Length: 214
Image (cartoon, rainbow, N blue to C red):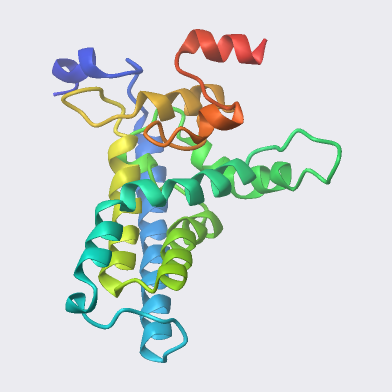
C-alpha cells in the first residue's frame, strides 16, 4: 500500500527497514517503562503514600473534568521535559540540556523519517519521565481517581504513536511535530496548547523554520 498512500505522506521518503526495527525495539522498551510507572503508581495508592479518590461516585464531575481534558493538561509537562532535553543555548547557567540531548533525547531524533514506531522511540530515562511526570504530578495535586492517571499514561502512548505516523489525513500525522523532527529547534509541545507561541519556539511552516535558523 505504500505507493497508494505516498500522496498523503508528509515526507515522501519511507524509512529503511533498519530504522523500523530500531524504533520498534525501543518503543517496546519504552512501553515497559510505562508499565513500570503504572506499577509504581498502584503501589503508592495501595500503601496510602499517594492520595486518591477511591470511587468514581465520590466526585463524578471532578473526575469527568480531568478525564476529558487529559490531552490538554499533560502537554505543559511534555513541553517542559522536551524543551529541557534540547540545548538551552545560554551561558548564564550550565547547558544541562545539551548534555541531556546528547546522552538521552538524541535517540528519539534518530527517527529521521518518523513512523508510528517512532512516537515512543525513547531512551529509558526519557520514556520513564514522559509517562511519570504528568500522571504522578496531577494524581498528587488533584487527588485523582486512579483511572484518570492511568488514562494519562495511555494517552501519552497513543498520542505519540498517532502523531508520528507521518501521514496527513486520513492518517493521523502531526505536521507541527514533523517540523520539529526536521528542524530541531522548534515546536516542543503540541499545537492545540500554544505554549510554543507564548515562549517563542513556534514554527508553522518550513519557511518559518528556515527564517528562525537564519
